[in-house]
Amino acid sequence: MARNKVQFQKGLSEAQFAVLYGTEDQCREAVMRWRWPSGFVCPVCAGEHHSFVKTRALYQCTACRRQTSVIAGTIFAATKVPLCTWFRAMYHLTQSKGGISSIELGRRLGVTQTTAWKIKHKLMQAMMERDATKRLTGRIEIDDAYLGGERNGGKRGRGSPGKTPIVAAVETTPEGKPIRLKLRRVKGFRRAEIATLAQRNFHPASTVVSDGLHCFTGVGNAGCVHQPIITGSGRKAALNPAFKWVNTTLGNIKSAITGTYRAIRDKHVPRYLAEFEYRFNRRYDLAAMMPRLGYVAVRTPPMPYRLLKFAEDHAQSGSIMCLQSQIAIYNRVLKMRQRFSDFRYNVIPGAEP
Image 1 (cartoon, rainbow, N blue to C red):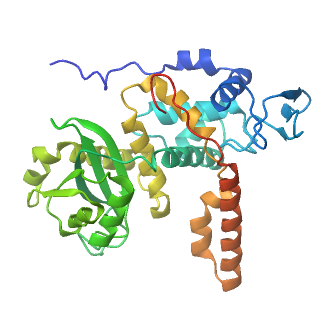
Image 2 (image 1 turned 60 degrees about the horizontal axis):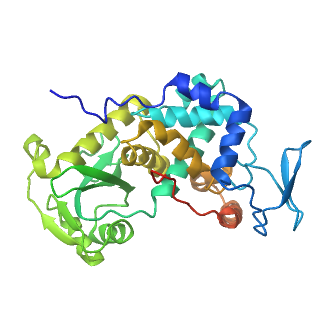
Image 3 (image 1 turned 60 degrees about the vertical axis):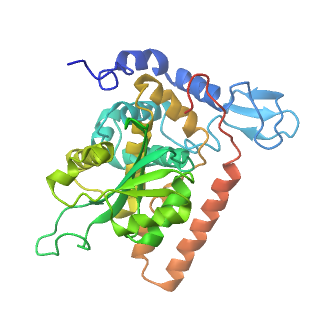
């Protein structure tokens, strides 16, 4: 049997990574190249003439005198961790098929688990924002699933506590070959919820193939053609060739989460799903995935730790005053992120990041 070219591609070896990004200067040059491919551009006035302040490693615009660093306004902003460490984290996130836990990442980077967690989630945020606006088109396989195991003494099946409902959709060729993947957390398997998901993630006139679950009729509200195939339940339904790739991806994701993380919190599920989605959609060129993530990272606005953890703080707030304070902080940070989101994605020769 012939080997699968995608599975057995060489990727980016650790030796090659060390040659390309082994020093802090090499990493800084790479960030400079990804952020300003044609040279420095002032983030305030778009001026190109500048001087370099060597003592502080800042670029000063000649026109407006604004000083900025190469990482200001990016996902690396205000970091106290060397760029070498960030680059090694990007390497591990892109080259490991099943993902890597923050504890293991911290051991490999030589940092604490908390620092590794922050780096990992900021990079996953960049992955999530990059694919958020891309839509699937053509033939789409769709299926529902739950993340989370059964609790002792709890209810089994749908509606049981501690489980997170998600929807997986795989765009395929007319022959059934997978192209791209979408993974989304939903509030529940309701028609209105699926209609909203389809409007945001599917092109109108796409053909959506489902197992006949009633909620999937909502894709018709987004202008898609719904093609239900009643499969029943059990192993026989899972082996139906019409849903080969959506079932395969769901199986891989559940196995990876169980084997790598054991469990993940509901509030962080979108980022973990985005990590798997990002790698799947760029699986044909494993070696290029790491620099492509770097290109995306410098175009992702800063994501402060407070915003990463906001959902937890929000849930634990014990008073109205505390809750209002958290919401005010959240809104200020969002405005700051919007102010930095002036970068636009340019086409990389040969492949889109």
